[in-house]
Image (cartoon, rainbow, N blue to C red; front, side, top):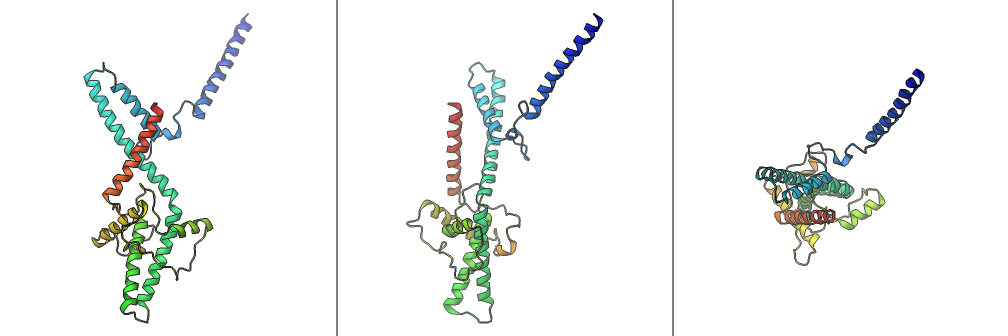
Length: 265
């Protein structure tokens, strides 16, 4: 009998140990721990899914008729804070996605514009002095190329990038290469074109180019962006006019509301 008493605890201990091992395995595999998307980011704000879930729960609590006044005030404050965090998290998420999506197109356009600037500088600084129309043309080309380069460097990642040379950028992206021979390339008249007859994307691009040109004239953007390069710190300047920013924000809000309706429905 004593032997049996001694064996039974062993069997019980073994079974309990297996249960604990299984529980530990579940924890390690992520079943009980928050998923990676739920972790707080470097700025201390949770992920989108967790924020949206918290907002839905908070709204359900506020919908209760018997909620105490003091608790209702606290919950309303919590909702306001959560919605502010959600706006920040959505902006961060859009910037990350757009930054990765349009990296190649921006790279090709930046390289092309840098070479156009160097070409114009060679013409203006060459031994053979330009005059008249040729001088004015080279100066205009240099000025336009610098505006366009600032456009590429400072285009906000909160918006879908509107290419300066759509067909050319697509061809380069497909080839996976970069053509060093841009001597015959001519800048499109994007700054001087009329807004009449332009589609929505072309109109937005024109507005942002003109805004970039204005900011350069005020000294808020570099007059020689080719000297700063892509590695330079971005200036805290938004080249998107308020109307363009408002339209983009409205599109993002509609998409977010549609997603929330889907989960709540």
